[in-house]
Length: 219
Image (tube, rainbow, N blue to C red; front, side, top):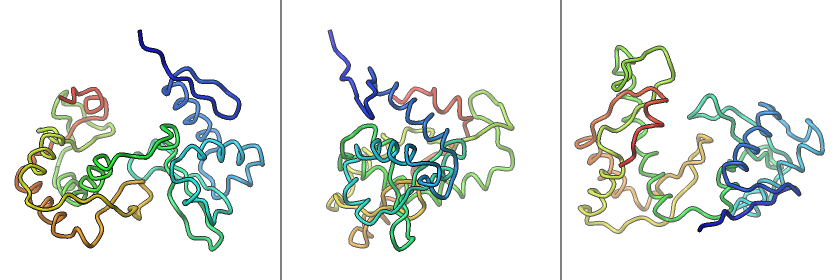
């Protein structure tokens, strides 16, 4: 028999990560899009700060923090994201999803994030080339649509990693678009270019509605 590891945050006990995720999502939604969480109230600021303390890079990211703001997620317009406002009014992204996990991402997950980020322009080109946005599975239209790989991304990733004769990157930069994704460093430009060319020549993309994409079997 397996047991769920309980999560305690702000004095509240959660019996599953899903329960904690739902709670945090609802809490941030209640704050709403705003340019200053502290202006919403001391309780809201402290409560959010205690949640984000679980982030493995919290101390580094908040070293010059004066406030938080809540914005619409750049990728999912129906979701919200949190940004740190620094003392010099610059902004630093901090993922509340990572804070929920409470542990750093693996090198492999960061590599996949950078690889996805580096082909974003190909995804957008495909989306823009579609005269009609109709789901390839259920033929529905006029709903939220995703661009997805016909062949799973994992399969493309595995094939490329096995074939490329370069050192696999293990350090990354934060993307600048507020999506909390990773991007390659200039030192790994050759690896990134080879991956972009491989994806362009081997990936087949399709349009799926959000429901079909999210319920699609991943293997």
